[in-house]
Structures are given as C-alpha cells and as structure tokens.
Image (cartoon, rainbow over all chains, first blue to last red; front, side, top):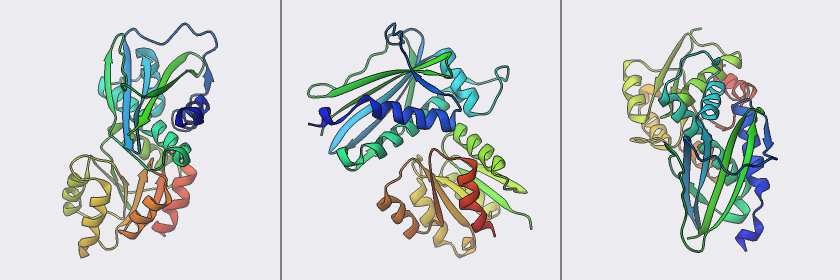
Length: 157
Length: 124
C-alpha cells in the first residue's frame, strides 16, 4: 500500500524546492533518457528509519556536482573549489532533499529519523535495500546543462 | 550597537551558505564566529559570548538540542538568542526545541527574507 501511495512527483517536488531555492538551478525532467549516470560519479546518500526505513541517493557526474557546489557557495566557475567542498555540498543536497521528502510523506510514513549523509565517488555504483523494498528513480536536469539522478528506496521496518 | 553572530553547523558548506544568506538579508554583524559542533561552540563562547547563534540540529559530538540545553544552563549566556536551522519541520519537534530554550526556528530551505523575519526581532 505504501508503494502505491508514492509518486515520483514527490522526488521532483522535493528536488525543485531545494535546487531552485538553495542552489539557484532550475529543475527539469530528463526527456531523452540515456539511462542513469554511471561513470565517475559523486553519490550522496542519506538513510532514514522509523516505521518505514530506507534511503535517498542523489547521484551526479563530477561536472554537475562541481556546478552544484559552486552555485550553493555563490562562487564563479573559475573560483578554486576543494573536493571537500563538493562532497560537503552534495551531502547537504541529500540532507535537504530528504528533509523535503520527509515533510511531503509525513502522512504516509509517519515519524522518521534521518541519518547524517554520506558521500562516495566512483563508477557504476549500485545500492539496494534488500527484499520487500520499493524504489523509485527520477532523473532531472539542473540549469539545463547538468543532471542529477535521484533514487528513493524504502520498506516497512 | 555592535552585534555578534555564531554559526554552528558540521557542514562547512552550510556555514558559508548561512553566512551568505545573513549578508543578503541585510542584517549586519561586527563579529562572526563559526563552529563545527556543539563542543566547539561552547569552547568559543568561553572566549566571548555572542548576541545570537544560528545552530544546526543534527551534528556529531554534540547536537543542536544538547547545545541549547548547555547554553541555557549557563547564566553567563542568558542573553544569547538561539535560532535553530534545520530540515526538520514537524510541529512537535520545533515545539520541543523552543521549550528547551531556543528562541526561534528556521527550516531549510531558507531565504534571506526568512532570516530577516526571524532574526531582526531578536536583535532588536
């Protein structure tokens, strides 16, 4: 019943709220989908627990993650940016998008607690929640030129 | 009158964003401090209290909830205004924080106008 109650609109709404308010990047849906970003990515995840448990993943290529960090920090493209700044920014993105999802799903999921986000980098990163879990994926464009792949996985605790 | 601000958040990125948003809101401070968690914040307060603290809730070592309690336990810090900044938006959670001593609460995502609305009355 929980799977049927959730729509990818929740991911899109949360992404729009955060990226457009805090990152100043307009969000659109990827229309010519070539599949999920897999090579040389930055993946930020945050887990949640309660009556329902799961995780949110925000996955970007390096260029998109860098653009997100620069925008969040109000820096120009030529400003020096540490890897730590990019990781931190991506962690905050996952934190804030999950906060928005939590607010949007409070009537469905009840009270849930969020973890501190984790950021990893690599290629062909996959994650799963095991049996009896549901998932949904949305790929969005950010300011036209960039992209983020959002994945939301959950199951009854 | 000189006003001082401390931003407490384990994310260096978020501390910069908060600082930038404070500037964009038009609020002016003569001294600003930053701390990465509650323990660090308390150590910096010992060197000199501030007028207002903007605190994240979820932080390692000492979270925002515990930090508020510690600040309120110390009579020397009774005039410090504490504003919590977090993604958490449930009424129960916010009420609990306010009951424990926070003066105001700002949810993420935030805008300069939100900072102006919440902080200006506390500074005046």
